[in-house]
Image (cartoon, rainbow, N blue to C red; front, side, top):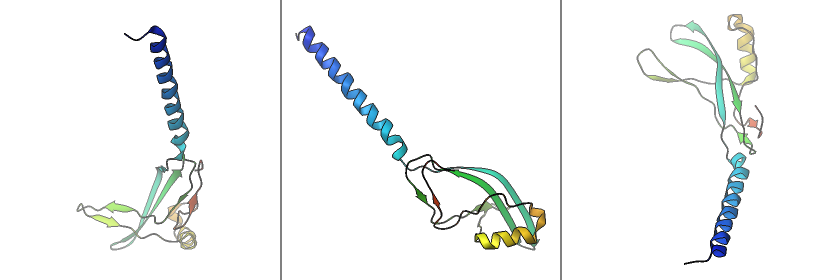
Length: 124
């Protein structure tokens, strides 16, 4: 049977190791890149038969310490027949013109998220 002192030393050692592992996990928590997004508002206008414009206002948050570079942003809509319709995105310059030409869309609140846009760690 091991002595009381040995059992106390082993127990203390296990507590120290457990605290060290917990500390490593806590420090690494913000090193994991995870982008969180939320849709705020959806606006759409029919242009002609089979064509429409859909504007989606959303907020993207990067809670990690790593920077995120957007490669592509697309929207997929499920049509009335159940098929997925992939939307085309337009650059920021054209988005400004769309809002000027179609006042029914309302104001443009935020800049567009485009290819190669960077969201730095801890920002929205």
